Image 1 (spheres, rainbow, N blue to C red):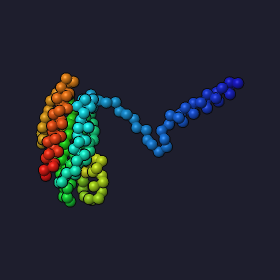
Image 2 (cartoon, rainbow, N blue to C red):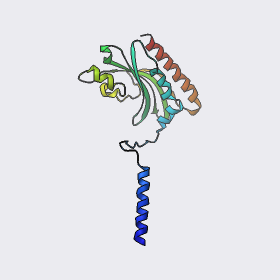
Image 3 (tube, rainbow, N blue to C red):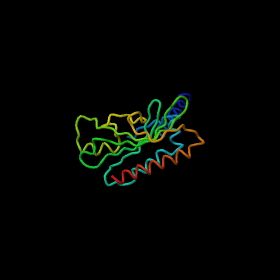
Image 4 (cartoon, rainbow, N blue to C red):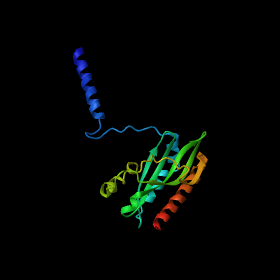
Length: 184
């Protein structure tokens, strides 16, 4: 009788494991816990705000993203764009918002970066497909916060009481970038 109970328990355990499995062919993705930087970006609605840039068609620009990026001491949300035409790939413009530490404060930085093409060869067909999902393949850059050679438009310490003001400031920069890309 003990062997029958053991077999029944084993059978129930197997059925439970089967029910918990993902569908065949689908990888199980482990959700990483949010860092304080990512929480700050969520609080100012960074991803949705930058997504507005990619919803518009521009006469002279191709715009992709947004993409959430993360480093050891920062997190960011970026969109990337390059001029249309065969030689437009040579420089990629990265627009974004980053949260990073300065002493004990989390800073929110809004800026633009120019990235030079870094791959040894250029194949227009492969580039056109690959650039839609990831710029780092061709532009050897982690997408981190702006530094000395970049255009830092705004930087301020993040505080829960200022999040609506920071959200509005980010919206204003997105409108400005949309106007700049719309005019050439």
